[in-house]
Length: 316
Image (cartoon, rainbow, N blue to C red; front, side, top):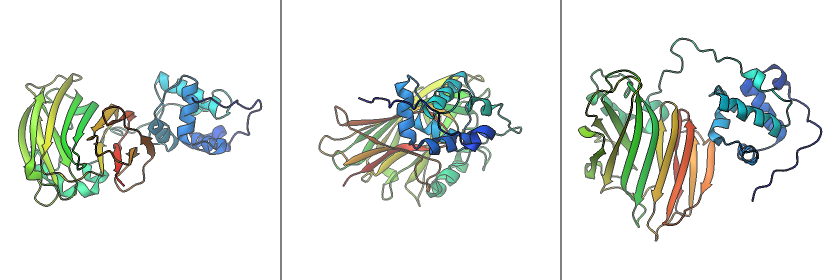
């Protein structure tokens, strides 16, 4: 059981950035000054009844995201107490977010986030009315649930994804999925089945990388602001042993749940929940996971920013 340590009766010296800002620098210096990891800070907050994702704290600390909602302000006030800061010393540094027109709307391309996907992503132009245009620009991804089934050899044999999207503009009528597998996977043996809320459109497979792109078409165009839920399954008959499964997040996502169902005779030595800003960078979140009943491991992510989220598998 976690027990919060007793807070000191006297406040520690306040870092200079807490007096002058900006918010992310003040938070970063306060965290360093307190000498706690983000996971320990999150535990202190949880002991106070305040829930926040470690990734959110990391984004705030590095200035990649900004607390703005009423709930965020409650979290910041709890952070002040955990970090031994005067009341409202961080809150007053938040201020209004200043954005130039269009800032925050741009979504990085998949190759920007995952350079190894460049060859596969070139297939997107074949499914686009305007080659080079940003894919899925008419919808925001709100929530995703991915459920993977593994074999005794440690291969992913099935992926079922349930997605909730919200139309950014009237007329959104489909979604294009990019799937990249482990090197050595036979993509010709991978099939796509539309399960619910969509039908399968065109499919393109890469001849030079283990990747594919495919369309999922809705029955009608959505109205602006309307949400739509759909699901599909990938059957991977020619996959190889998996070392990870990651989802690329190109714009803010409310929640993501990833579940991996292993064969009872082939459970990895370690499973690690990770979040990265880009493929080649070290994780900003790295948390051990444990298999529950039924040889299943789950990773839940909330309030995700742009980046790559998933589970790394260590077999030996």
